[in-house]
Length: 298
Image (cartoon, rainbow, N blue to C red; front, top):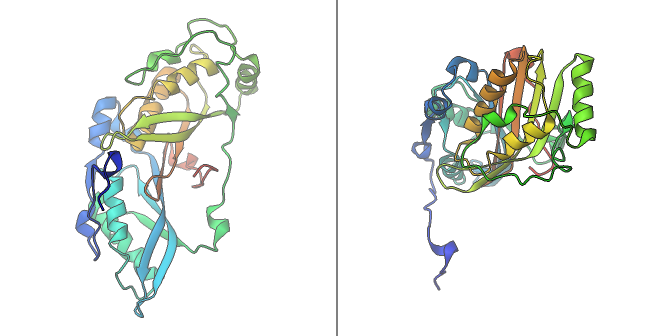
């Protein structure tokens, strides 16, 4: 019996033996050249990948299952194409390993070779829940910042950083803006998040959904931060074709240039596809790097 329609248009051959050659590197320069900003500042941070469909065999031929976290330095010259990573992980399903440590070591070696950087791999047992706890983003949620506006937000084809600039001082959704203003007046970190980050995968054109968190200190007072403008800017990514890492780096670059903060952290938790979620984080200094975590929709 054949399957017709959109679900039958394409098939994928999954390897049934250890196949590190399926890993496909993509140069970070492809995204950074488009941003056109300082590459060295975009190379500070980590990409955390979580894999939930990891399995291999013991020497007795018994299947093992685990969850995994791959920590990829933002300074690596390459990222790995996510579907190629899924195929690689599937190639381990019928491969024998003497121990869990041997699996970690092999995956770390293969990813490090592919990405030309030191990749850290950590496996988690299914009953090791405390290691992968569900958390919540900190800061002020800005998704209702335009609730009091009558304007219709246009669907942009590309991210529009000019939306960050305030065109007037109307406090749209005063509750959200007042909370943000209170943070600024207190002189401490300004921290806000949105669950509405969306972009498209440049390879498959499938939608990528994520939660974005930004923390800044010491902003340029010439450019006030308005929650409504930040939200408009985030929404301008909705039809943009960009990898998870490139989108976070674009946001990091734009916020750096418009607000000139003394310190900045931009991180995103993207929802899972193919048993893998990707969580890029960029910081102005590695001392600001947070601990990896997961959110409810991951």
